[in-house]
Amino acid sequence: MGEHDTPGPDGRRRIEVTPISFRDVVPEIPTTGYLTHGIYAYPAKFIPQVVRYCIRTYTHENDCIVDPFAGSGTVGLEAYLLRRNALLLDINPLLDHIVPIKVYTGKVPLDQGILQERLHDMIRNEAAFHPQWSKIGYWYPTRVYDRLAECWGWVHAADPDAAYTRLITAALAKASKYFSYADHTTPKLFRTGKKRRLIARILQEDWEGRLIAMVGGGAEAHLRDVNALVALAAGNTARVSHHGGVDSVTYTFGPHARFDALITSPPYLQAQEYLRTAKLNLYWMGHTEEEIRTLSRLEIPYRKPDRIVRTETLDALKAEVGRERLVRMLDSYFCHTITALENAAARLAPGSRACIFTGNPKADGKTVEIWRILAEHFSGRGYAVEGVYEDTIKVRRLFGSRKNKNPDGMKAEYLLVLRKD
Image (cartoon, rainbow, N blue to C red; front, side, top):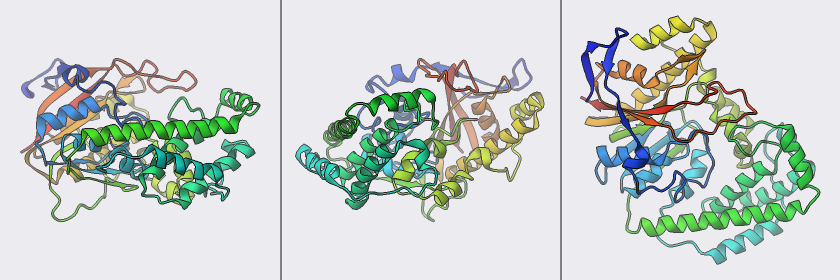
């Protein structure tokens, strides 16, 4: 399996692609949201079946894995379950709120009675927390905002590292979006007339009781998921470290950092604004407007390339696309995505693998074969293409109220496996 010396019909080097269904290959994972994978919503989540396949195939117990685009921490949870260590990096500071409860490493089950006491404390709290965001009032009716500010006031006064606080925070984050003017059916942050009408109807009912019930019910469900993880991971000593709000392009690893695998899913082309998606929650969680603005400038659509990546496929694509704006976007995307991958892969042990999961989006109607461009770039630079696996997408939810860049959705996703020579 791998590259062939003979060119394909289009003149490019041919790379063998193997069809696969990761859901069939990893049948022990029943759903993508099993255990604690579903505690936080996150756009374009890395499906755990792919991660488990990579960990199981290319690593051993006690190995250490790095993910420079960690997102919602899927690699961290799967690594922990398989008794591997992991280092997770992401520009989105939400990672540091997700991982401690999603990859809960406590050895004793959490107590539902204690959770109920904490929920009662939250309900009675009157000391408000006000997010440092000038536009927060745009997203809420005044009375809903005031009640949420009291709930979040309790979160900020409680022990931030306590598991019960984190359970409630996760449930409150979901409720805070549901009771806003933001469309809660999609990760994207945008206000719709339909949602304004829904909020108007909710406010005619016992909306406050509904809000509290939603937070309480969510926290209890999260407790059950966490306790299932505790039972499954009995005796597990693996460590998962995480650093949110960091730039994987320039991140400085410790002098002795060594990894046995890189497993990641980079941000998708034209869908990289994850901070914009998360900022309603981030402001409630205490992050400032200046902090989020600074990090947002480092997201790929707003970042100028400091080098131009050249590969056979990318050069041909840019010549076809033509439009200057899209060429700039491609240059930015591949510059910073590849630099982040190179930065982490430089710490890989010889003979280890980099597993990179991507889709093939479209730009101006032209398919962008991200996996092929990455394969062409890394080949001959100390890495060999060991395999490319094509997984047909069974379910892809598109939102009719938005102008989708790829209105038919991607048909498949690809796992590129590189071996470090």
